[in-house]
Amino acid sequence: MKVKQKIGLEELAQFSLNIENIVLKDKDYAKLKKCRSYIEKLINENKTMYGVNTGFGELARIAISKDKLEELQKNIILSHSVGNGKKIEKEYIRGALFLKLMTFLKGNSGVTKELAQLIVNLLNRDLIPVTYEGGSLGASGDLIPFAHMFATLFGKGEFYYKGKIIKAAEGLKLLKIKKFSLKAKEGLALTNGMQFSATIGGLNLFKLKSMLLLYTHLMGLWFELEDINRLAFRNEVYELRPFKGIKIFLDVLKKSLAGISIDKSRTKVQDPYTIRCVPQVIGGIIDNLLYVQKELEVEFNSVSDNPLFIPEKELYLSTGNFHGESIGIALDSAAISTSVLLSLIERQSNRLINPNISRFPPFLLEKPGLNSGFMLVQYSLASLANRNSVLATPASVYNIPVSGDQEDFVSMAGNSALKFRDSVNNLEEAMSLFVLTLYQAYYLSKKDIKGKKNLELTALMEKYLKPVKRDIYLKDEMEKARKIVIEYYKKGNGLF
Image (cartoon, rainbow, N blue to C red; front, side):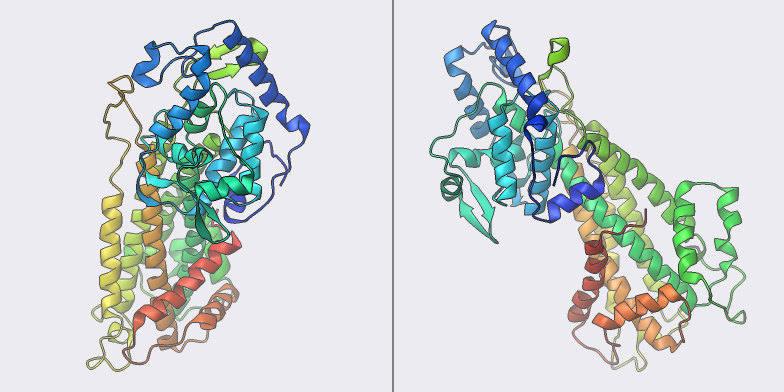
């Protein structure tokens, strides 16, 4: 993989989810080397620079002597390694390291070429340092998760390697590192920055977009099965209320409904909101997620550590670019969108399962009574919808000052990212249940499907699923349905 001028959501996902070598040439390091020369010039001139020759946070008032500058950088890594929660999945760390490297190459962080090459080596060998999901406040960047990543270079912690977890000391042997040290500013550059939270947000948005595409295809199948009144989906709907998201949804839905004739004797004058208002609900979700993607991609391509250097202007800047408020608010809104989608899926599944409103046999089984059928599928969906409603509570509106009130307003973007991840994971469970439910309805309908896209979808369903004719261990079927959700994700195609 060659260095690109701009990293988008797809590029981040491609690199994070696959082992792909980074190829850098001397010219790619040019800006980085120029910045390093400038920072060394300032050090030699005894210029006072935060975190370079001062303490950190509230301790910035304490000067550090030249003979202690490397020890200072080691200390920030070790002292900040206080992560909480579970070890986070490897793909998030790969993405964060990749974005960190791209940031360094912009030539404003002041690190050495050797440190950048070390990150390249870690990524190309797929020797990925373990870190923990919790601890970031999204101000001064993702300090704690990054500290754990790079504590491994001092022999502390663990690495992911070849499908297992190995001790940091074993990883250092593979890297042929006997004694590791950081130059002035490098420990601070490694820990500052929002790349960890941005990666979690980005990979889950990528996943959510693929689930939205699958969801839209499921709508096409459902609407054909139920002979839904299509007047609600005409172009004039968008023209009279031109939200971009509505048009994106309708354009894809129409491909599923193309060439289908409906039985007007089964068609209602007005369908319920969970059918008729789908373009407006999903349109609103899409519009919000387009904003989220824009915010994340700005972050992917930014420099967000501190202090910053602009060598060509001979500028040293002690700034707040590490503050994650922009993506914190965006990812909180993404969790809200995910919660809305899951709640809609629960209500739509209820319309298929509930014998009081469904056109299908009670609880989607031909012989109910002795058999409960899909009754408890809706229970599970209700539980997931409730959990996502809780996760939709914003983290970014809560502030807890830290560092002796020097860092007195933090974004909590790290927690916003984790909530979004958890809400997307819950949605994946819900999508699996919805796929299973709609397939059962398709089987019971005995309908001769005409839509080309709908035929493709039912063929994919039949690849993994079989009709449920009596009570069985439904968890197995749910896991089979999940493979359809994952297949969409792996293809990398999203609704927008």
